[in-house]
Length: 447
Image 1 (cartoon, rainbow, N blue to C red):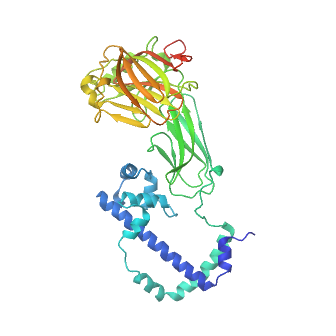
Image 2: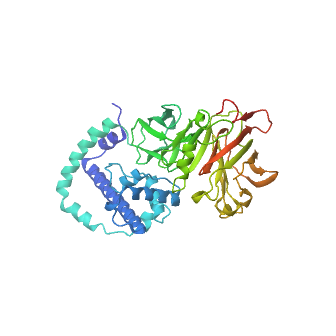
Image 3: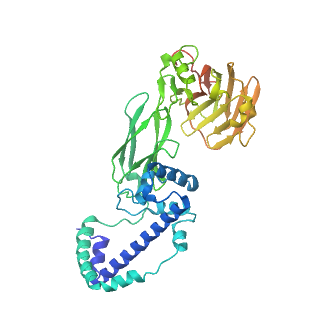
């Protein structure tokens, strides 16, 4: 049998030396857990939510979101429940979890928190050890035998070395075609043992699936089409990722109820133009609360770059009452590495407009986006031109907006037209800048 590091340690030291190691180890773990408890109490006091044993699930969800906003690190609600002792879990929190909690508590990292946390005298613990020395000596002898039998069979303890990602398996496969769709993630986490293992399903880092060490499969539900980058996260770091493509079969219409939309297939959206059937329009306009509707065309356009293309669209907003008085509409371009969103509304609602160019976000609250203020009660052609990561939006010969971004969007993977309320699309033509590839989405075969 190959001798492990623990086996060599045990056979090279006396029972008393091992007893000393054991006692020191217990004291270290005792003090570490004491620091963890102090940190949690500090956070509880900071939040002012009352005793943590009264917290319900939504409070852990909110705490997870607040921690991510402040530290840029995701600790899922399940991870937080484990740390707070609401879920039985034997392993100690990972250093990433401790660093993140310490940062949220107002410290640089876990070491900084421990250095600044008030310290209590250890005389009580020392007195207990001296008073029960005989019992502890007997326990140490028993623990020695346990160490020999257990660690000799188990093999070396984790050394904190980097994860060998070549031994980690992370794959996915959609179960069906169309929407809604479930996706099966096949996993082999190898020897990874962490309290913070997740699958990030979407671009949104809040959309995660919690995993346990050794878990072999997980499933995720997708209600909207798109090109997603699924990531396997360990202690907040992506160790593996792959693309996940949920396509449409032609155009797909959705009334965007959350979390589950109502679907309308291509044949229900009429010919020559995209428009929802009368029953859908009546349902939307009868809503007392704002609701959007979307036309989706999601498929792989391998030859068209998201950083160099032209999209010509003619759109019309068909509902302008109650909560839809601003005539909000947006054109969304999906890429294999990101997305672009251009929002429109009547001029009087320009403050509510925004533009997202992958890694660059521009808000109408902080910038003048009045150029994107359009009256869409009549059909209007809008041209979106992107050249070398520079976006220009043009309508009726006038430039409405110009801006640039840094991170590539990748290949174009889809187009969406979204309306607050209802709308129509009369034209949708995508082409590369050379004009060699031209796709008319309103032509035969698209609807």
